[in-house]
Image 1 (tube, helix red, strand yellow):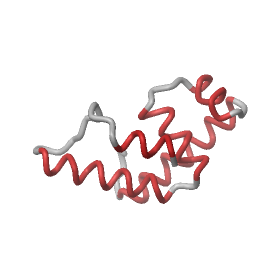
Image 2 (image 1 turned 180 degrees about the vertical axis):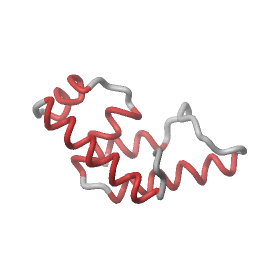
Image 3 (image 1 turned 120 degrees about the horizontal axis):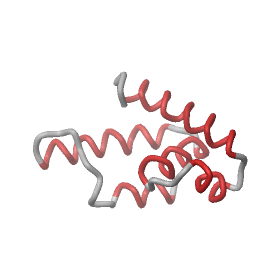
Image 4 (image 1 turned 90 degrees about the horizontal axis):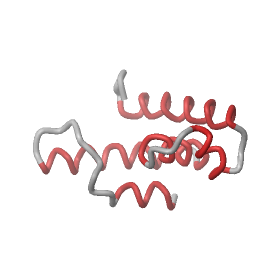
Length: 89
């Protein structure tokens, strides 16, 4: 959870919300949804989309194969979409 915890405190995350209070709520929704993912999926999603690492860099950090990053990230994003109730999460 260390990577996800660091993400929660990053000020550069852009929100789709209209005001500061809405932005906090949106970040909280995303953080809560990330907490619901299995550790490996959460790590892959955070590294790819919040830390902006390439698939290859993510594989190196996670100590796994490139294909594992692709499949794990795909499953994690699909689950986030379900949890957030969004088609285009």
